[in-house]
Image 1 (cartoon, rainbow, N blue to C red):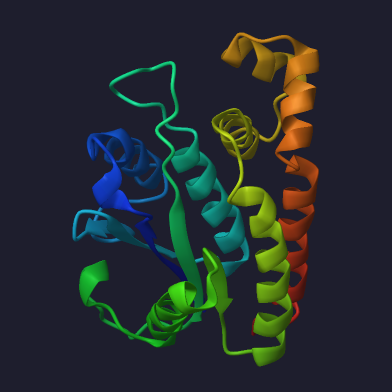
Image 2 (image 1 turned 180 degrees about the horizontal axis):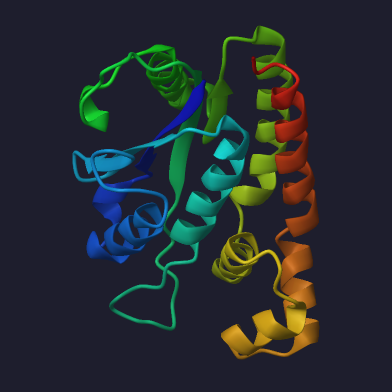
Length: 214
């Protein structure tokens, strides 16, 4: 069993510079594997990412969203570019002897594609589809509630989430040094990002999925 994330940049045509989001996204994906084997970006604003460990799928989706929402405009580095993303997580199997990620098939890819097609209709920017209907029903309700927070992360909140997700062992004082702010400001931003609640959701996703995976 594996997981596939399918996503696209929301209202990408309204963004002034594609390179604002393209390079940070490629950098993030390169840290997870090689292009065409683990990930691809296509049609200018869409992407797919495959991971062998489905348990970290939601964690990676959160990090993708935090990364994109924390990007600052190339035209004015003091301003955030207001980039957002919609994503679907599909969990299942992959057909054997598959080529590059763009040509692969299997239930993980089918589930991710079907969930992605439902996003606009349901007005939801993150969904999961697995072989287990009860899991999907419960988790998609939780994601719908969590998106009230994630869709409204400010640039500062997304930036702090990105650092905290990428380097979970960092202390608040160390995060403050990276961002050039005081520890009390770090604490306030982490609270506004609902970091602890997002981590709880990730851990619940892992726990419930562990019970179902063969």
